[in-house]
Length: 57
Image (cartoon, rainbow, N blue to C red; front, side, top):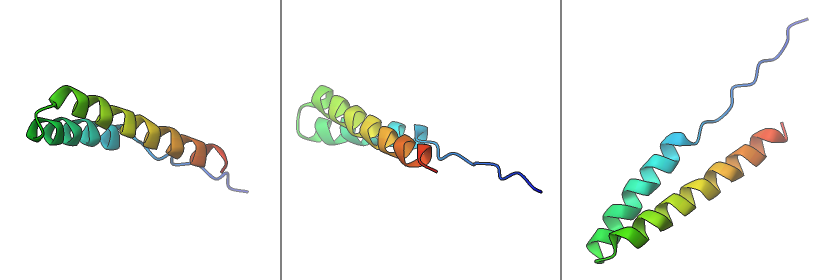
């Protein structure tokens, strides 16, 4: 019998990319702080959704 090992999906890169993208997008609109917060919030939301998906496996 072989034991299946789980390879969890990491969300760190997604969070970091969305923080940078939000800051750049917000900077182009004159609101880099709001862009940073929106990017961080979106990244954390995606990270939680990935965690919930992996938890069910």
